[in-house]
Length: 288
Image (tube, rainbow, N blue to C red; front, side):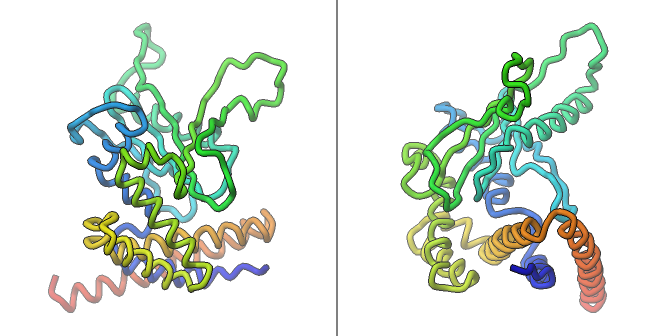
């Protein structure tokens, strides 16, 4: 199968026109910008009863550069740093990725606190909780753990480091108790499930349109979808097209994929520059 990068760029350019969050995934936007939803999700996962969303400090690593490593959602709450990722494919390397994210988060935390790691005073760090929400088509357990030590070469040597990642299957019919406690996660699961089902007989945009319309009619994420409908459409198109794009890069081989990726990055940059020029021209015409 040959990959077609220009179709990806065209779709991305259209998505940029939908609104401000073209670089975010639907999951990131739903939870990463809504402290109330994050608090509800935290309480559901930890069987807690926090009431004030203002207690949450979002610390997600932001990076707008095309296809680079960035975490989905990260936030501090009562001495705990919560790192959340959503995955549509099984990835046994999530503990390694979380290790990288956690190192960056701690670096930011210590820099902000102006603490000296070489000093005599014991530093205090927020306790990490690493969670993956899986919604892929491959059959997976309702809940399982991945460990950093699974990647270590010498299994017969006692390791001095470990990082555990908790994976929750959020496809329809899984972890119903968790879904009952978090309406946003339930809505996310239902919407993605509907899209997957309708894609079997419809083109992607039609499947997304139908899924969004039905969720609104069924009072699922209704307020959010009504206020952000075009942005959600753009983010979902970007999500699905990015997955197709990345799959194409893998199939073409790493060397060829990297070369093509650089070509696409330059083409994308040119298209973004043109969009910015067009936007400035429209502002001038409007007298803004």
